[in-house]
Length: 101
Image (cartoon, rainbow, N blue to C red; front, side, top):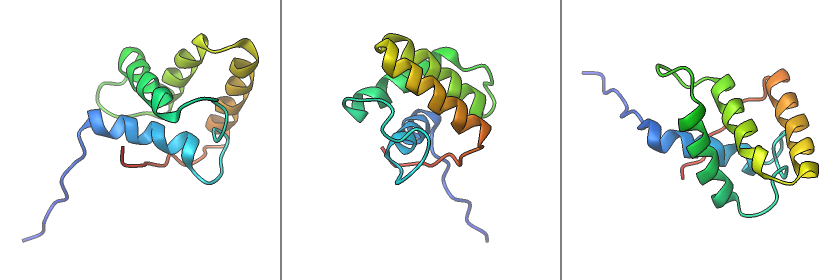
């Protein structure tokens, strides 16, 4: 009998996706948000829950929406750089990485 791997609950998957964005070795979103990554991951996850439009699957658009919502509360210079980076991330179709949170 073929074993089916256990699915990761969405509550665990979303923080893992947001951990992967700024902590991968390279990528558009690496180093964009100054400060503690753990704080950003927590706030990004909350923004994702609040801003999510597709309740069936995790979409790149919903991840971006959470990111752009979160950066509304950062200083203007950081927000400008983050908006540019997230725009490049979505246009370049950079892979979404996952880090177990």
